[in-house]
Image (cartoon, rainbow, N blue to C red; front, side):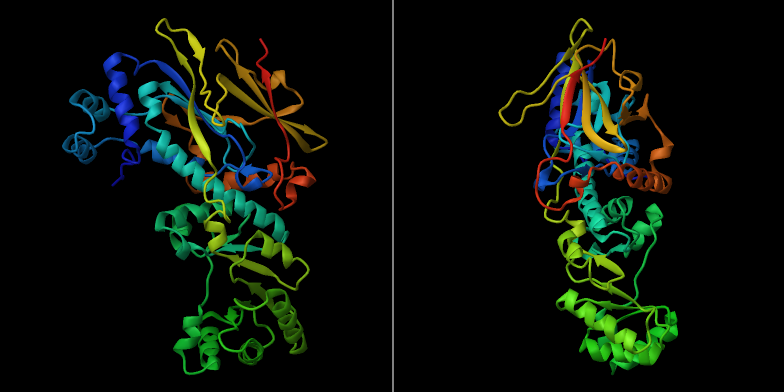
Length: 442
């Protein structure tokens, strides 16, 4: 049974709809744009994530009997609006940046075209998905850059709401994490899952040795043993004693990690377990991972920091009307002019200029009219960034489900190679490339 997503909507979207149905503007064709005015947290790039999730949620955006009953019983909208909502389907078009793509201030990440009635009520859903998932993806990408070739696992489910945890695991996987501890994310999105034992496993047994023996008997010598429940040095000694020198790995979850990792590596080597891997956890973020670059660490497990956007839990994106038809059917560019919250009107076509394989600018061609929208042929030295996602209400199946996740992961790996070197630094700074606006070429 499909669960409706229609009430993932702020009330004012439906009160605007009611008023627009009354005054006749509800059926005017409109263009809404989702974008970020700036990159939060002084970050040098952002990563688009959540698009595939959003498309599926829009497919389920239906007002069934239960939703309509709630709106009627709570007098949210009038009878005419309820009748309109009973037949609601998004029949418009959506284009946007591919999931996994990089974005910068002003990037037209999502463009929604339809009637005002169709498009305005998608605002909250679109923003809640893309703001959360893009924040996690951007943090995860920074961690992936800091980790280099060392594997990363996401294990932050206990630090997020249950559905946010699944979404965060998905976003982290798209941007470079190799596995998640969250089984629902594995089932729903096809993400590899991992996990062995917590400190409770060791504490359950009468001795640490008993715990290790039981785990090895159940999972084999290739398992990873958690060695810091009591005394780390004694834990490593027991781990090799129980599993032998072919022990798969040990995990360290406490202490001064660079120092402890070096000591554990030296001890493992001295015991002959030269192939045993070291995984570290313990409140890691991109800065802690970067500080371990020279340490003998083989893999990282990241929890709280990645699922909360590493201090930036939202991408700060907005959803604004940028063009509409007037009463005569002519297109008009419209824009909000509020101080520090202005928008740029007109339909946008976005391109990334690239020189010798390195991105140099975010080029946005703005069209006041709709007779012409720039295409790749007008910008031969740039890569077009937008793709059709929904056409006449039909979602492109390539961008949803587990296959969509794998496509987004592959796309992100490709486009991240375009980042200039300065974008890889973790310190706060201006965006790595400038956003340049040009008039669309007639």
